[in-house]
Image (tube, rainbow, N blue to C red):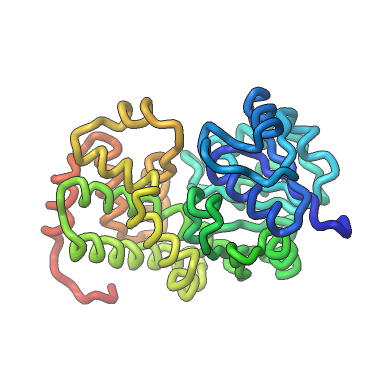
Amino acid sequence: MSADGAKVTVMGAGSWGTAFALVAADAGSQVTLWARRPELAEQINNSHRNTDYFPDLDLPAGIRAVADPAEAMAGADVVVLAVPSQTLRRNLADWRIDPDVILVSLAKGIEEGTGLRMSELITAATGHDPDRLAVVSGPNLAREIVERQPAATVVASASEATAIMVQRACHTRNFRAYTNTDIVGTELGGAAKNVIALAVGAGIGLGYGNNAMASVITRGLAEITRLGIELGAQEHTFAGLAGMGDLVATCMSPLSRNRTFGEQLAKGRSVADIVATTRQVAEGVRTCESLVALADRHGVDMPISYGVAQVIAGQATPEQMISALLARQAKPERT
């Protein structure tokens, strides 16, 4: 690693990839940002702005954008994967990644068909050493991070040394990075909270108040935790930044793509119509079916996630989803 800081390559110039590139540059890392479209890379280099996502905000001048994946990753110490979860496998098949680099996953999802978390997908697709892999998750709304508002995140890795290296590459006065070794809990919290946020958005779109939304968030956390424990996660992870922190931010902020998507569903728009008219990906739409399948495979009850999956599949309306949840049999809270 260079004396001037880690050489960090961020693969993906979407909103979160761009925000993470800014954070890494602020932390003193040497940052290269890969953009799929050459014209976007040229624009970032010339104007220091990503007008696709943040047209009014300047990026650090030190961020170098390129459109060639091999050029972007050449000489990197850390390669950050910032593409959507459902395209990650396809991207990895096209890229040649040095086995010695530290890989960092920003994607929050569960792969369709396989039920794999992103770290599992990465190791399966690349054969990368799990000890040289980290995941980043937390209450990280990209717009606020690019504005350099205070935020915190979790860097999780099976290797404490890897987690600390990534922490140093992205820790700034405004972006506080914590470490842990619970990859399962950190990834599951990041993936499942998007599904719960769709339910919260639907409730907001239907005009329900804060009591109802707080109830959905809390019961959503309970079902995420149940599945996490079954999969081997540490329970306390779900009370932290990658659990409750990310869940609250995603469910309650108007900046949240998943909450906004749920609101639009409640207003009568179809899934296809919303997808066709938005640039950014609402990961929960593609994750809900995989999440429910994973829960079924392990015998875990996840009624909110199941209801969301029915709505996304066109098998229920948001009103019917809420009615079904309210009609469930009363039971003790800690079950």
